[in-house]
Image (cartoon, rainbow, N blue to C red; front, side):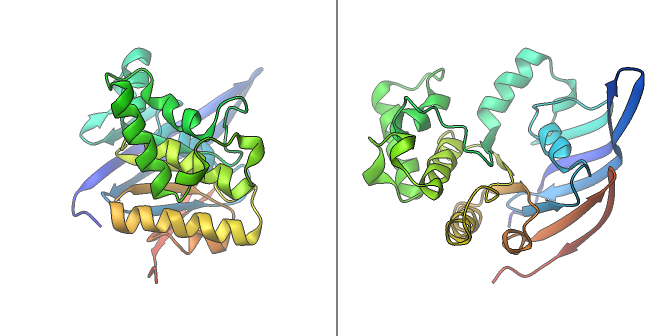
Length: 233
């Protein structure tokens, strides 16, 4: 694990409006994430886990408070600046993969690189390396419908790491997988953390998945209730 702090969250509040009703989702959230940390966010449904993840990833904005990532307070960025920052710094792993069915594994992984200044040859090199890392170099010409759920999630992870982002955010990455495939995906994420030094922030309901994390933080009704470190064997 790196020695520096890569994410610093201070006095974060978030609410949503439903008609005249104000729904408070997060209240006074403050904590730091070390570079190279693997953090699991846990809590019951409706506790604010995914909302917090989306705020860290720059998908949503808080009502107040700050989120500083790599020295940049992302809450102060304009929509255009935030989109550019997000493309360069955040890799997304979703529960339902979000692959495009009419594109091959290679083409799905290449998508985040299309708007970069990389040449076609450089993009191919990056994509092939990412697919090799996730163990799917021999499936690059397959379409999502020709892959198992576990393989689809590997493609999604390759897409998330192809830009070499500062942080990976994962929202229930094993939630749609059988136990064996889930174990394989968590093993892959553990290797990305240990061997590549990736900072990973993961929302999960699964205690088995959470065992891969260095630190587990719990949310309940929008309040950070506790945190504990754990050995990752």
